Image 1 (cartoon, rainbow, N blue to C red):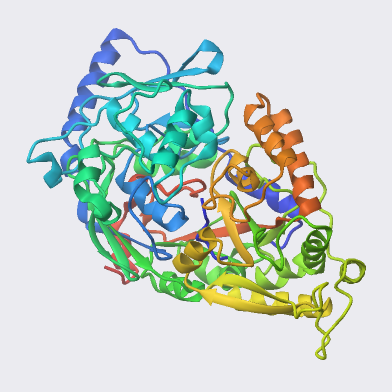
Image 2: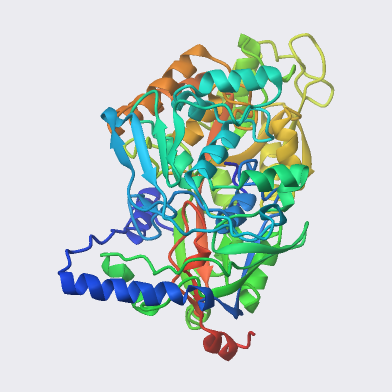
Length: 623
């Protein structure tokens, strides 16, 4: 998933330990009940569920910021801003537990844990009965219950190669029988949703079964932990309008969407009541106490303002117009001193959480570009020289104001497949970069002292960047570094959604951006897998050795095996340089004191677990 996010004065290791300790979470195991307590619990649950329709208070408005979104189709998004809103409207079978660390799946619409049999190759999941979609004309005035067939349909949409997202190759290979169906759909231009799929079946109204080609696929979590259920009749009725007609079973529904301006969600009146998650971690004791006894969701309205500039976000948060904000780099440091909130902000009761984002930010090279792509020795040397000529340590200090770590591998910290023992080693060596270019045909220079191509033509490399954020600082540093090795740089700067479309169409030479957001490192690693579509494999990299390593990774049953394979894949990427693993960013989440139930968001937003103390907000001069 493409990251939207634009952009501790201690050592990198200390920062890592600090963040991991801060995010340490454990899930409570329920004790057994006597018959009497079970009856009492049942009666309490009945009363709890009966109050669900009146839990959300329309006077409680959560105000957050986002970059512009592209779609609200739960199976065609490919960016983090769209994903955040989609996850409030649509529901997967499971979610990553709000308070658990390491990440673990907890039921959402599922009635209980996954039943895994056949040596890990068969996964059976049962749905909770009585979950309903929000109203839509396609339902013709009748309540529409969520059933297992809705997930069968939704998973088929996820792997449909003709949809805008382009399908997921690794998931297609995961599900028994899916490869042939997808290839037929690719050649015919249409996937037959009525055709039975051996590895994806609704056994009955509430039971879904997946049959896998291999056990231990780490990316199974993407399927059951992130993909929400849509109703086929709504998708069919909406046609191309499905991007703006989201109908789910989640805690919120769409009320208003003004493109480029804001999205407003309102509480789903049909939504079942929730309780706040439990945790054994002492750090969560006060958090749990503040939410004890509440039916969720409490917040009746979520207002998402499209704010592209980080400085504007910070100012809006500081004034109280935003309830919380995600800040990075120099903008975050305006509120921080020594990695902590400045005294004046701490005195206002604000909270601060520093999180290493589960994304890899890379410099991507277009392998199909005639000037910079390809696998010839000259083109590989050019890409490697650019990588060696880029000063990433200065980038961390200047562009990110110390709020990032230089990436020494593809998989981010805190994600399976990351090797915490791998030393961080500087790759910045402009002298070696110049020597490499001289040796592989780029010795000749024009009158302005910029290098020519091996066949004597002018060489200009254009980098695509999204507008706002740290783009000015990054482009300034990159130009300075490339000038030092004789490469003329140009910059194509455009809004986030536009640059993503160009990226997926292969209309770029170089691009700097992020990808990931999952608990398993397969998401970052699969970017260079040749069988992935351009919506994932932005560089269009193709190498059999890397593909074999990717397939070994997803079949590896152990963390040690994944780490070893991921290390090999990082070495391959370093050798051919289709992308340069650049940085792992530190995100600073700052929260006003009237927001209750807040724990740092890592893999997805959890707006449904939050509450607003209206009296405390009013006391701070905000309505």
